[in-house]
Length: 171
Image 1 (tube, rainbow, N blue to C red):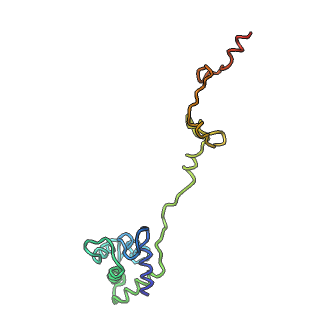
Image 2 (tube, helix red, strand yellow; image 1 turned 180 degrees about the horizontal axis):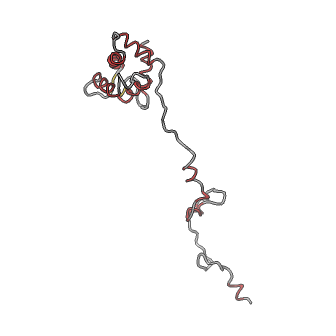
Image 3 (tube, rainbow, N blue to C red; image 1 turned 90 degrees about the vertical axis):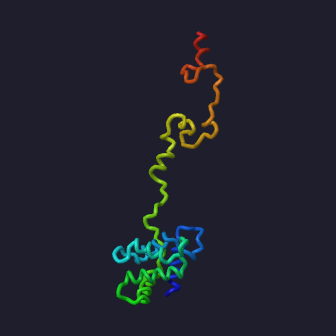
């Protein structure tokens, strides 16, 4: 049964930290283990109790606990969670709560591709100079869309009657 608890310890120890070896657990992951495995019930064992027990079992200058320190912490939390039982029975019940549990990822934000992203990348809604960078289909024009090419026609830009001078003079 302790081996199952050790597996659970390792799964939670590496959770959220890709560089972790799984042999030591931080306070954040210890609290997550207690919450996800229902060791922390909010009445007899609170988050404050879990933090106090973690601080008690870890070394003075350390930020993590080993599996042996974890077992000491579970003994302490077991006595608090299952009052009236012997320490060994309480520890056994704690390990039963931990069996087969994995770190939960409920409530984790997922990447979205709809909504604002679609609105921001819709080239048909672009205005001003940005509109000039895309053709009607929404495909980018490349360098032609970013560069002002000089017009050597002799007319001012935006002049509507460009190219009509010769037609007026020939009458």
